[in-house]
Length: 236
Length: 255
Image (cartoon, rainbow over all chains, first blue to last red; front, side, top):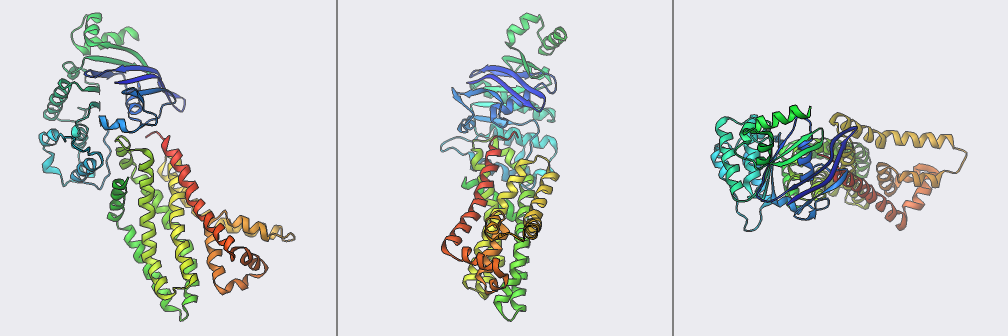
């Protein structure tokens, strides 16, 4: 569904992405793992077209995304740090997104809005929100339009245990529907029951892209956190 | 695109600066027209205020607005929208509100007190100047990432167009006083939309006779149909070129 070929991106002298090639297919749930500053977010932003890569190309459903924009209809994106216009309320943001993205006949999935209890907060301005509530808004927006691909950048950072459990349940439910899900997280323990594939990045380079079962076999560890730890020790 | 323009305009209306600006223009123009017994004299006083204030407010407000809506733009870029339409909506929203403010604040008094050819010229150039400086400010804002620097650049650009350019022109005039510079002056004036507007309005007034030989040459050129069309084309180029450049930059910008 998403194919990246030799994607390179440079910020000044630093190579944020160095010849990254990835293939993501429908129905997979992929964990993007790597140390801070390894290029995970940059890669995600490249897929979304927010960052324009220097060389290489990314295709979405066999179409180059470089001059395309329609493909984003199929993506729900939850940013790492949700930044929203300060003087808009939650309700206005939700209405605006529905207004902009509404597809004729497309169903709107407000399950997360309900479960997070955002209905009670609709009149609150974005600048008064706590980090966790902002994350809830971001998550609700990502799932709102029932997209085929979900890109979640550190989805549970800042969420309370109840909310992060709700979100995890939702991710699993969407995965069952056969959607492609890309997740980055530093809390590996919570990825255990989610992911089917693991992509490990380091300093902008793709170290490996493996099925989680292969990874478990290779390292002899059942837990993802231990498996990754053993690889990190081996490579360093 | 219509939807984004709608949200931009709602957002601009929500902060009260635009209303204040309109009220300020309205008060100034009404005062001036009521102070002078001859309304064409009033127009002349209004000219100088408009040529300074309209570009300044247009420029600063747009630059600050673009920086402040960084979050809004970031949110929209990850949605199924063309970058082109996001940027052009921002431009359209800003220029519409600047132009409407000018029309209500200065245009209506001008139409009430001095609905002559000069008055209409002033209205047209004022509207064009509002849009031109929105376009220049957006270019300055997309070029520089840092907010303080970007707004600084916008202020410097305004200073350049409003004051420094004239100083340079005078300097050239005095340095090369021995040479015939009239044609050069016409060409140079095209490089500053404020000067161009000033000449266009002044030539419509009778006082152009006071400007001496250069004034006569100006009248010879700008007074004709061709000159008029050329100068309006030049003003439109001042809108299109910065917008096109900023659009190109924005299309490749990393957010």
